[in-house]
Every structure is written in C-alpha cells, then in structure tokens.
Length: 317
Ligand SMILES: NC(=O)C1=CN([C@@H]2O[C@H](COP(=O)(O)OP(=O)(O)OC[C@H]3O[C@@H](n4cnc5c(N)ncnc54)[C@H](OP(=O)(O)O)[C@@H]3O)[C@@H](O)[C@H]2O)C=CC1
Ligand SMILES: O=C1CO[C@H](CO)[C@@H](O)[C@@H]1O
Image 1 (cartoon, protein in one colour):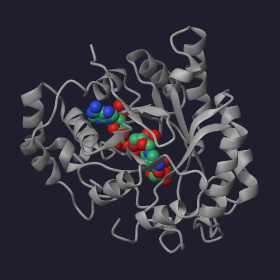
Image 2 (cartoon, rainbow, N blue to C red):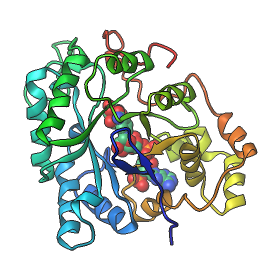
Image 3 (tube, rainbow, N blue to C red):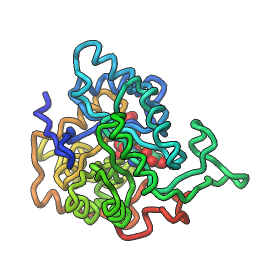
C-alpha cells in the first residue's frame, strides 16, 4: 500500500502530483504497458515529449483508463515538450496539434519548451537534422519569439499551462521580464550528483516549480554508476527506513523541493519509485546525499549545442 501522494501548487492555480512517470526510451509497447501500470499504481502525472516518439503509446494507455472509468481526463496531468526543430514561431501551433493528435487528446496539461536552443526544420520527423559533416544543425531562434506562440496555445485551449525545460537562471530571468504568461515549471536535470541548489532557489523565488529529470542519474548497473545509487552509505540510510537506494534518492529530491520524474518500464520499480511518501530523511541523511554533488555530475550535457547562443549550461546555474 502506498501512502497518500501530495500535490504541489503551480503559479496559475493548477496542481500537480509530486512525482511523475518518466517515459524517455520507453518504446515498442513498453511505454503503453508502463503507463497502464503506473495509472493503476496511482500515478497521475506523466512526463512525455514529442522527441521520445511515444506520445501515441501514452495516449492509448490514458484513453484506455478513461474508457474503463479508472480516471477522468481532468484527474491526470500530462506534460509534453516542443522539440528543438519546432522553435520558429510559425511551427509552434502545428507542433502542439501534432502532439495532441499523437496522444488522441484535445488538450495537454503542460507544454514545455524542451531546450532553449533550436534546430533547423527539415520536416516533422527529422528531429536531429545533420549537416554534411554529420553535426547537428542548430539555429538561433530567440526563445522569447517561441514563447509568444506558446502563450497563444493557452489562449486557444490546446494546453492548460506552459513552461520551460533546461533553462538557466539568466534565460529564465529574461523570459520572466518579457512574458504575458509566466512559465509554471522549469524541468531540469537534478539528482545527488547535480543537486541544483541555486537554480532551485531561483525558481522558488519566482514561484516556478522545478521538476527533476534523470532523478536516478540514468543508472548503468554494469558500471555501478552513478556512485550515489550504488553507495553503501545510501544503502544504510535505506536500511534505516526499509527503503531501497532509489527510494532514498527520490525522497531526497522531493525534500529539496523538486518533483522527480523517474522513468521505469518495470512494474515493480514503477511501484517502488512511487512509494516514497511515508517517511522522512533527517539532517544526517541529507548531509550524506549532499556529499555526492559534483561539478562533473551532469548527465545530459547537450554538447552538440555548446557553441549556440542559447546553450544553457555554460554559466554556474
Ligand atoms: N527535459 C529534458 O531534457 C529531459 C527529460 N527527461 C525526463 O525525465 C525522465 C527520467 O530521466 P531518465 O533519463 O529516463 O533517467 P532516470 O534517472 O529516470 O533513469 C531511468 C533508468 O533507471 C532505471 N530505474 C528506474 N527505477 C529504478 C529503480 N527503482 N531502481 C533501479 N533502477 C531503476 C530504469 O530502468 P527500467 O525502465 O528498466 O526499470 C531506467 O533504465 C525521462 O524518462 C524523461 O521523461 C529526461 C532527460 C532529459
Ligand atoms: O529529454 C531528453 C532525454 O534525454 C536526451 C539525452 O540523452 C535529451 O536529449 C532529451 O532532452
């Protein structure tokens, strides 16, 4: 039995469950099965993206559970993301409608700009456009121009809320100074090796919820990486509360003020990751988890965009 899962308030009056199911690399039927299982286990928050190529699987599962009467549409929060090749203003509404068509839904709860930088457009399906040297072909669309079109999607009723992902504090400050509708979320990489204290504080000051992607650091069990997920001290904390190391890490992310988005297509882990709301870490536990923070902790570095004017990871936070 899982205890009651709390909700977090967004700055526009909507609310979101404090944990969400990640779906990157969940494909070929796994994503639909994982989503069905997650809904049955109590998840009401799903994190998706056009780029993941599985919006149709998530939508099929959600629509099945609505048809079975397990959930109503308004009880589940679905996030998806505008991919980098759709940033030009004239493509934003098309991209959102395309995602809605994939899901088989008539609105999204939250539409995020996936990254602040942009790619050249060569067709909806060419999500990683390469030049003749085999390098990703970036463009310099201003994310403020993209944002104005995101705002129109709210007015059109295609999405209830809008937000961003992978924005640094300077990009967020510039957006906040120039928007009509404030972003409700910044979805960023966050786990013990990249605990994002400063960016979380900045978002909190501006009433923006932080969702934590790669919350488990995208584990590689064959290499026993990342360190924090295979560590004896984290195991000892888990033993104290009768929890796994993954649960300790996810609980830490909740307690530092984020909404973690663990991906799993394994039924038992989907349940395990959700079952983190019946205990609390103490100060000593936090100290242990803080000790893993490192300047090299980032998993998603997006090095293909490192020279782009909108690259987000070249300042401290
Ligand atoms: N906005 C952005 O730019 C990004 C957003 N995201 C979002 O965040 C989500 C999570 O990030 P992701 O990159 O998937 O990485 P995660 O840190 O969530 O790791 C996922 C991996 O962890 C395994 N796993 C899940 N639960 C457990 C557990 N309890 N114990 C041990 N291993 C476990 C999964 O295996 P298995 O499935 O086999 O159980 C999978 O291999 C994504 O799926 C996506 O929705 C991710 C990256 C970038
Ligand atoms: O959401 C995502 C999943 O991870 C990918 C990198 O591995 C990212 O490119 C993408 O943003």
